[in-house]
Image (cartoon, rainbow, N blue to C red):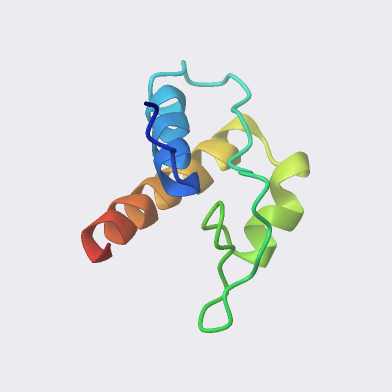
Length: 83
């Protein structure tokens, strides 16, 4: 029996892959196709990005994308502590 993977578990796996990606390379989008903004925070429930981070992702350089992923890595770990 396969245990279902939550969006945050998938996001965490993607973050681990991105963290191993060479500097300067374009990075995978954090989008988990669970696009629901939390009412208590400026954060998407699926990918944990803010509206600004979502809006600017496609126009961001690899360095800017990596900075977003670094912030997401911290958010991911915080969410796993809370669950």
